[in-house]
Image 1 (cartoon, helix red, strand yellow):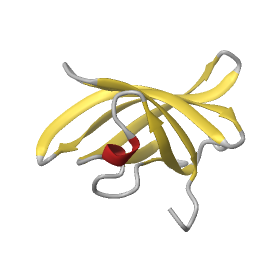
Image 2 (cartoon, helix red, strand yellow; image 1 turned 180 degrees about the vertical axis):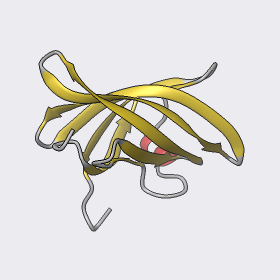
Image 3 (cartoon, helix red, strand yellow; image 1 turned 60 degrees about the vertical axis):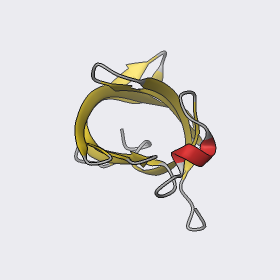
Image 4 (cartoon, helix red, strand yellow; image 1 turned 60 degrees about the horizontal axis):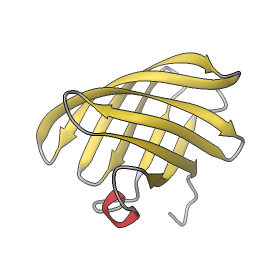
Length: 111
């Protein structure tokens, strides 16, 4: 998980357009060394419980999450893999609701 550790800028989601993803703040997903993390996009904020996995020979994580969507409690699951040194790809699922693939790149100070 060490190579995934850090904040990644969500640059694409299959379920929502870029303007929607950045509605409140620049969309992001972040993985911490201790197996936790967080994400934010549109008006959703989630906190992650991650487990390191290998998918198709690539380093990744599977996670469950809890959070808020416009103040309402939401939860779900997801996964992310390091596609290459500059890209994370994954999928995010809302319990009993929407789901979306995502692609993220290293977060830069200008984001």
